[in-house]
Amino acid sequence: MGHSKKKAVVLLSGGLDSATVLGIAVRQGFSCYALTVNYGQRHRVELAAAARVAGHFQVAQHQEINLNLRQFGGSALTADIQVPTGRTQEEMQGGIPITYVPARNTVFLSLALAWAETLGAFDIFAGMNAIDYSGYPDCRPQFIEAFKTLANLATKAGVEGAGNFHIHTPLIRLSKKEIVLLGQEVGVDFSLTHSCYNPGPGKEACGECDSCKLRLAGFEQAGLADPVPYLRGPA
Amino acid sequence: MGHSKKKAVVLLSGGLDSATVLGIAVRQGFSCYALTVNYGQRHRVELAAAARVAGHFQVAQHQEINLNLRQFGGSALTADIQVPTGRTQEEMQGGIPITYVPARNTVFLSLALAWAETLGAFDIFAGMNAIDYSGYPDCRPQFIEAFKTLANLATKAGVEGAGNFHIHTPLIRLSKKEIVLLGQEVGVDFSLTHSCYNPGPGKEACGECDSCKLRLAGFEQAGLADPVPYLRGPA
Image (cartoon, rainbow over all chains, first blue to last red; front, side, top):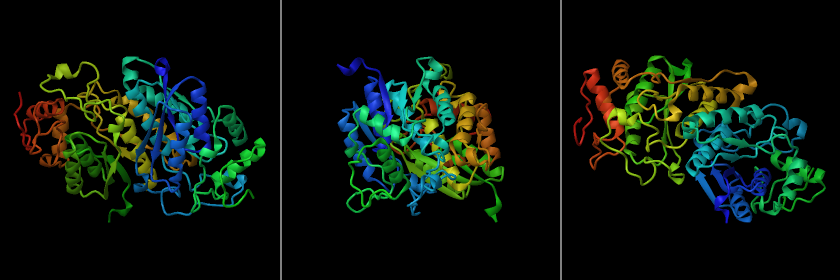
């Protein structure tokens, strides 16, 4: 009898992090509305992963929305710029990576807010992480705080006093190792997820991009095997 | 030799207000990048108006981006809900109108921010108005302030100190009469614009929806004739 549960909108990319966030929201008893943005990312195989993960957690509804951020360009994920490979975690920490998509998290949270307002939901879950992606400006806690302030001014709720938006970012201070362990705890089926920026012809993860490197290190440190297929193993 | 001008992204719906904002940005010497969102609005004829207005002001670039907010519903502008007609300006002031689109301005400003960051622009122009649309939460000055704070945290600029975003809303405290007069001053060709929520079969403005009523009253108070065709005249 799920209709008395509180609703939440969960941003779901299909990766390890957002799958873990969805698992957390489900465990916390929310009726989950999963939102996936097809923004023209080069790793579109993650869209299929999002659908699999949403099915696994039996969400109330899963919507995929099209928004072609390629029109704006400016990122290795949405333009014809090569994704960097073979970088160490130290190298990844230096400055804002070329895989940063301009204002992506602002756009994604805005879309989640639009759907939440329609649903009458006041809880939005997202997988931002300030540790592994310290170079991304829109993964920082102060950005999330500013978005919460904005959400409560931007909507009917802010005028009519119907409620207060909460932006849940349960992974924001966790290491990838801790995310893997938490994902396991909340029932994520890792084999359904996809993290690679630059998948191979058979949709295998490359094992060499920043996202693969972080994921593989996280599994290794957690003492678990990553069940997704790789073209190459960890360095 | 426009390449040394400062760039600005201007949200352009094709209506009277955003056309006036574009005229203001051009007059202020910005190289203008006009952004129009095809969000599934029922009055799609405004998209053609946006292209005409962009052409009239010879913008550096005009992009139309598709984002189907109908997937979320919740508004008379994006769902099969009837647009109210024949309301007085006093009636329009009572509460949030059914034509409010959940979180629309948050989404639109986020998209403008994404493009601005790619262009290296720090100026965003938008036509929000807190007088005629006092019922819309995302037309209030405190919302714009909160978005500015967010923009400067959300982007590379906020991390690298490259600049500060400014959100220009030059109409926010003007009456429709003042907007009409300002539009005339900055060279808007009103015949190219479209404001009606519920246009007729020949794309004529209905003359009865809130948007038509406000526009007609603005022209009347300004002592000017509105050159666009109407199905019915002012009440």
